[in-house]
Image (cartoon, rainbow, N blue to C red):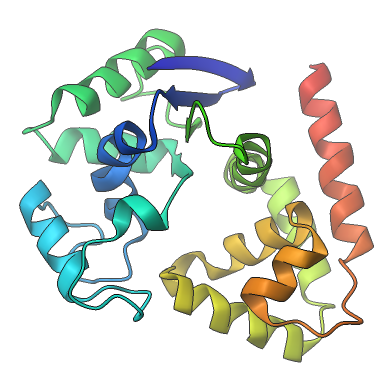
Length: 226
C-alpha cells in the first residue's frame, strides 16, 4: 500500500490487489454512501456489512451473494467523512489503520484539517487512470465550492430525460440518492460515450455535455499546475 498526493490535499491510496483495496475501503465507503440506512452513517462490523450486502445486494442481480469485491474497483472518501469514520470505528483492521496513519502523516492532524480527499485504486487495474480521473471529479466537487456551484449550474440545463436515465442507472448500480448529483456530474465529465450507453442506456445520438467536460479539464489542468 502506498499513498501519494496527486493534487493539493487529494491523496491516492494504491493497494496491490483488488481484494486489498476493497477490504481496506469497504467500511469507509459504506459508512459514507451505503444505500442501506442500517449501514450508512452508523457503526457496523465487517461481518454485519458483509451479511447485509449479501442479503440485500443493491445490484439486484446477485441477491444472496456477497459480490462487493467484484462490484467496486475505485473508492472516494471526503475528508470530514474519513475523520468521522476514524473516530467511530475503533476496531480497525490493520489495513484500515495503516490508511489512516499514512493519510495523517501526509495531511497533518486530520482531526483538524478535514478539507482533503482520499481516493482508492489498485495497482494492476487496467482502468486505473480512468478511475482516478473520475474520483478527481468527486474531490473537486467536495473541496472547491466554486467548482461544485459551476457544475450544478451546468446540470440544471441538462435534459430532464437524461437526468432521469442517469439517476435510474445510479440506483441500479447501488449508489445512495444522497450522492446522485455528485455521481452524475462525475460520470458526465469523465466517461466515454460507450460507457454512458452501456450503463445509463442513453440514446445513440447522446453527446457528452461540452461545457461540463471543458470546465472539468480546465479546472484539473489548473490544479495539476499548482
